[in-house]
Image (cartoon, rainbow, N blue to C red; front, side, top):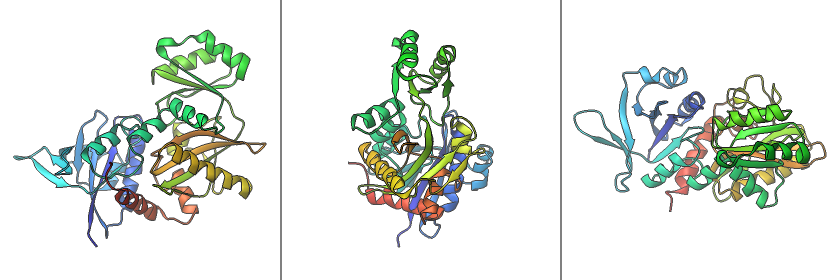
Length: 355
């Protein structure tokens, strides 16, 4: 069998840089050495790209940038020479690449920007495409799109900094929805900038805080119910793992809960009846397809006490250590972590280059 060369991209300029390192180290160790050659490419917090020839442990413990085994690198946009261009050394050299695995979270990682670059390079890559990545990353667009297709969403409003009027938001919160209100930057991942507001003073402060992360803000009414997620994977005919339930250690999932797992409790399958969980799986696949996803995504919902299922959010590159929610749901469904990594690479290769 022909060996393929896989480039694992890690790090990045987003606030989720550290989580990317943990996820990528696990992915690198799980890629079957009998099938693939792996090239590791790290992106520093200030946006420098390096080919890294050290071990995955150096990525995990964040010492990779101090390694002597670094070479500056860029992605070739030339369709006739798809791969990496090494910039260091007496002469520019080139490495062929068959597939990219961008283990990147948040800004410039799962928001369509790196996907657009890889589309230009015309090389297959793991995960959602440019448009679906951008759509899913923006919490406002995702909520609007899902709501327009008649799926149940939270009660929400949104506004940009240029046209923000606090009295309008306060009137909505106090007369239409009621407190508490969750205030979120539209494009910040991992619960960065999210605040729970229980009165007008807290609401105004939360909005001002959210604006430090993004120019667009989403305000949502609270949903009382169980928080669950679906691990959806595949291209034209996606499949779904067992539904996982999360029991956060705080009133809502923050960065530690979402990625570092903190004191979060996970139950797979979720503690609901099978018919309800099957409905969650169906909705997960439907929303995955609606938003144009491929490769993988985690689709999150609330299950209210009356059985109503409410869309929460979608994450196109969720935390990806073996103990993260997506791999845990797949493991409970019978797919090991290594098998999952292999399947995602195969999905990218079978999906081919963008058209």
